[in-house]
Image (tube, rainbow, N blue to C red; front, side, top):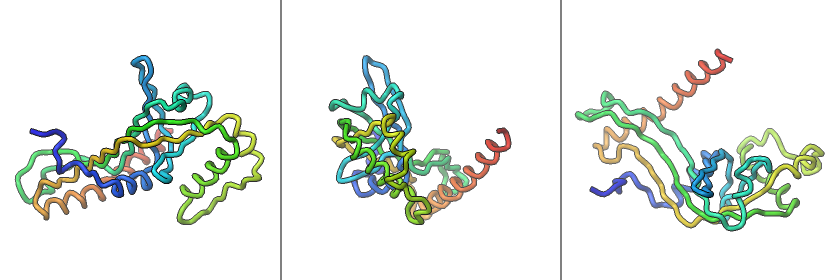
Length: 199
């Protein structure tokens, strides 16, 4: 049997780009001397590349340059799927959307490019309401440029993992979709209530 099942793979780059735009916080993985370095960073997709920034004191910063290889994972919605939602007999499973990317990373040394990139990223993340605009004359922004490095990732491999009960009957596929929506809304509220009540 082929793994992963073809019906759980989505090779449409436009679908994967939508995941990247909707869930920009990425897991960035670098490996050196058989040791993995992992950071969680927002990345912006721009003209076929991913643009990001990292604190210079993060140990992974030294690996995000010089054409090093990097793996990036974007995570969309996910949830447990109970057999009780199906109209047919099934077993428990887990549905999720993930995008796995591989590429080559290069550091961008220009402070002017870094500054503009931070402004552009803020503009993207503030959409659609744009309640905050990062002013290029903000002195705090200028002071922090020495502590942040910018990098870009040229993507060499795309893999979309969209496990959404596609192998079920149309009614059950829709039931799984509704469960994904409901579960994410309810579980986030419950999780945040628990976390904040214990702070």
